[in-house]
Length: 574
Image (cartoon, helix red, strand yellow):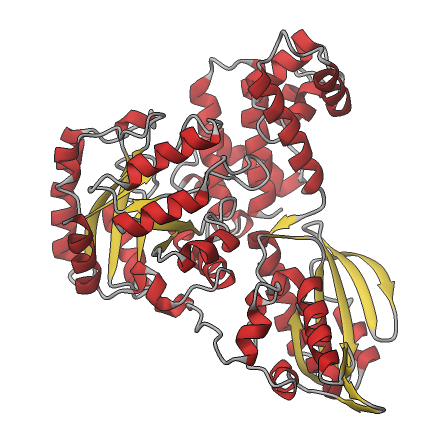
């Protein structure tokens, strides 16, 4: 059983406990925290367990004896008696309702007991027919309907953070097979979209049958759907489908391009080719009766008179014209990132000490790391007030002496209240190196109200960055309504940065909004919002959003050298 599978069960226990008895917050929070730790832990629980059994599991910070024993039972049997027992006390309908984004345990109970909805379909009917009008306000009813729609859209789709490791592992194994010239995953995953359906892989080889036979024997495969001469479809143990197609080396570049580009990109490419008397297909480029094949995508694009178009840009947002005119952006790379500006320590809700954060950042060869804990106004356990901020600063100064290779900067993630004001006083913000402000409450305000709220925070001279700007949580909460043009113009005017959150279920700001904001002169920061060491590795996903948004190194402030970053912050505040 994988960490993700164990974490899913721990989250499920927390939800059931809240359905049973929402007053037992200590146990609920313990399971939620343990689930988060397990899901993102860099070592598989089964590997730890092999070492010294339950003792090794208890040594994981945040995992107590009771939960460690439950993890042991899951690893040994794949089942959990405790989960079966507590599920009996909760109606099945309530369990279904909490799977809908935006419906928490309390609302699920109300839906089942007061509205008496039998299932999600019945819930939708009752809301649309007006039966729920006296139980839920209009805004709540709309949010429930929105959540139902989101859950339907995401059925069968995976977050990129779940799909990419599986795809990379399979591609690596395929490349190691004797006779394979090249291989890569394609489709929306190669374009680094936030969610994907199936994983598609293409490989170049003159021995397709041999490759397929070795492919279907890979570890992790639980079912072979189809097995042909040059194609095969399998189901992975994580529940995703993988499709492999083998082609000749001569046609590999054409097929790779065809299956990577979005439908819109490929249509635009074919349309352009037709104006030049050419026909583009997955087999190559045809001029008259002659078919030109390509071993690489670069050869294909160059043959059409274009620069190579990076996979992330193949969405028909102007990339073909830019490639023809040699005006494609030089996209930001993970190696360009010199520091993470949004990391939580154990001074608020993080699991790392400041010393542990510094050590983890040094391993990534960062020049600087920013400790950005929550402030007390949000209600987060251990949120910082002015007094504790001063105490934390003393610890930062002590740790800094032990880590001279990296600069530890002091920050907070301050809450933007419903009226746009901040939940900590300006005189304290003045003492910090960098300040991030984020919306954490009142997500469903009217469009102009939310826009004014954001702009008020943007215009505050102490606010350097707006965190996870649209507030969306993939599969759980839609972005709030905002007049983005007004927000982007305000950011440009006040030189306030917009964050691109690398956290898997956020990936916020969305790529097309990044492109729009860039065109209005806005700068960005790509951060992880890390709460534990493993989260720092998520930076690649934020970079992929930036690349899809046409962003370059110069657009990202945490590609700046330390002295340039501090100078930039000082200049924008004066």
